[in-house]
Length: 293
Image (cartoon, rainbow, N blue to C red; front, side, top):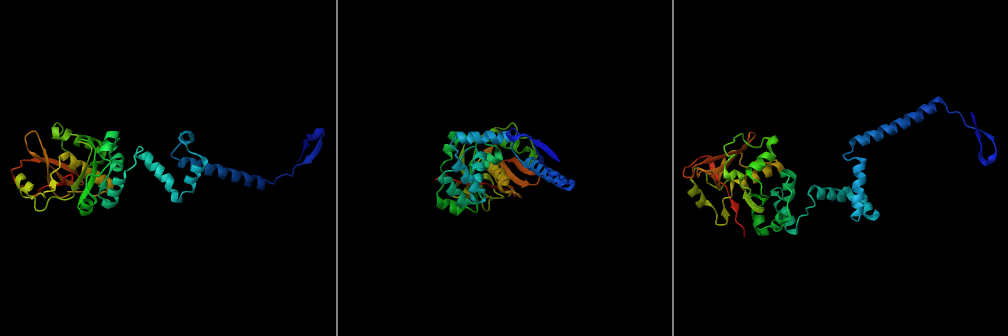
């Protein structure tokens, strides 16, 4: 096959070798495979090209350079990229040295600010982050309690708030008696709590006064809000059910003066009940948390 070449003002005949049908089919197949691969990769993307462009613009405006971008590209196991994503997931929150140290000591028994953001959808204020910046327990106490307690960054979420956030997960036993109770609406405050994972020893089959006498001098009984927050949060974080086969009294009381207890956290959900404090029950112990130092 020939075409006319008008270069340099001259018309000359230039021969173009005719491609065989097999060659044309092969090229078409290669182009089709390449396009299919691109479409497949596009289907797997979690952000659009427009979002990608906008994110890059924002990062560049914040000081991202070619050299910094290359560090992310070259990062072993994408470590830098993962850290950036974690920072975004945590709303820009970065743990303090005190918090990092506590997490290292407590291991799986740690429910910090990051966990509260992830599992309870908390959006911490500056005041709350300031209140939680330092762990109010010494390293020696944390070492002593790392297997028996959960260190929890408690945010001001009421029992009703928590129940609403996990309603689709069926983590609460279906009872609505406490919907109008003040203790269930109590939001508490942003505070660290070191909560015991089991009832106080030998505290079942005892009344409230007898149970309080069993507490160590460094312990106190936490509120129902703190206990529900701890039990549900700990389960969401690592899948461990606390107080699965019995209940524990809390310091909260209902409108009739009955002490609120929580527990029996089995497949049907966490149970929130009330019983008169002067009565002894075989399946109700008492909860405990460390006092602040």
